[in-house]
Length: 168
Image 1: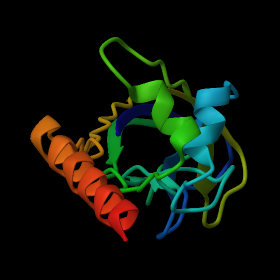
Image 2: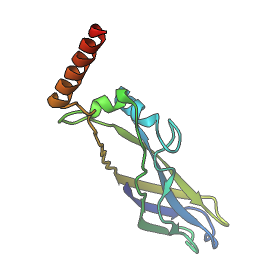
Image 3: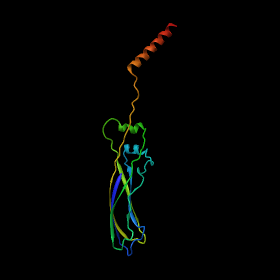
Image 4: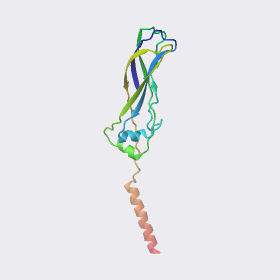
């Protein structure tokens, strides 16, 4: 998952912001509410109902020394690596049998953090775009099916045992 946020922060106060002032965006990714989404989410490594990638935070836009009446713009990105999850539920795996597609819906929740030192007045705007992609790989091992010759040999052996028991 990657996302990009564009910020514009305007200092509407009477003094410059001090050292340690910054703005950043964070994003969380959740699964939707369909039966498939909920079945997949039940095995979320972070806990069902939790964000799949934790909180992904963009790089900070430094606002150190931003003068009164001035503004600063910038673009920052954030990214996270995929998580591995293992599923064994036959109900869930039934959705991934054969060919075709099974939609899995995602939604995101974002927050904006603004840390101002020696200042409290601001005007801000931000926009965020995100890309989430996933890959489901499953392995299928069919149950062993006995060969016809093995079945015939077993039947012949059983018949021989019956004949032997009948003689006695």
